[in-house]
Length: 299
Image (tube, rainbow, N blue to C red):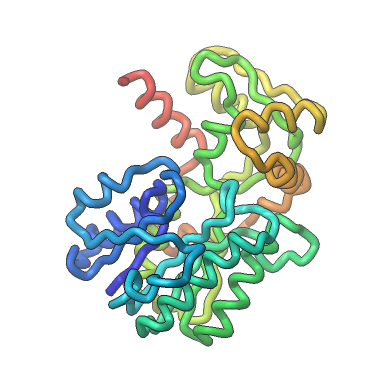
């Protein structure tokens, strides 16, 4: 059985849809919802797809064996906080560990893991949780895993950089010249769905990144083009950035660390792995922005 966790989030939900598109029977798909608030999706939307849905508290190992029962292939979506990049925390890592232990007990023979660019970068705390989880998977499922090291999700810029909504004329950040290779959630889900169904690359790692690196100043230009009105990038101090992101997240330090990683170019990649897996050109950030604008104007 193909198992996907974190299905109340947009990426997990889209992966389940990708499995159905690729011909997997709904009876052979297990969708697991976490004990955390949905991130861009709804568990009711998943249930409407006709797949098996089970809910789980990944912080509590008791009962998880029953939740993961029947799993043969698992696509593990981490719950490690802000945009999949956050310092190593015991609780977040324990969620991953508990899910892997339950999948192992169920007889899973392969695990895919949505990791992050720079997961093995020992000098960056925001990648620590990914590094520890990858190493755990290697020890539990030797040569029976695939790591999808994904770049920053392009949609992040719609919610955390584009602060003021469609009427805003400013975007704020620290990373004026830092280039980012962002990936659209739909592309990430499509690549994950393909790997989950075929997993021909056991023991392999892929860097999934957009092919047009951009800066936050570039994003302001994208917004100007799509909205038809001037949008300015405003570089702010670390103190002001802390204040801005405190509105959206309780983990201000993680958000700041992520922004600094963008500024330093740690989330830029020249990899063509995403194009190879998709068999097409990846979606660009301007295209993501245009879709967001169109949807907002039609509501």
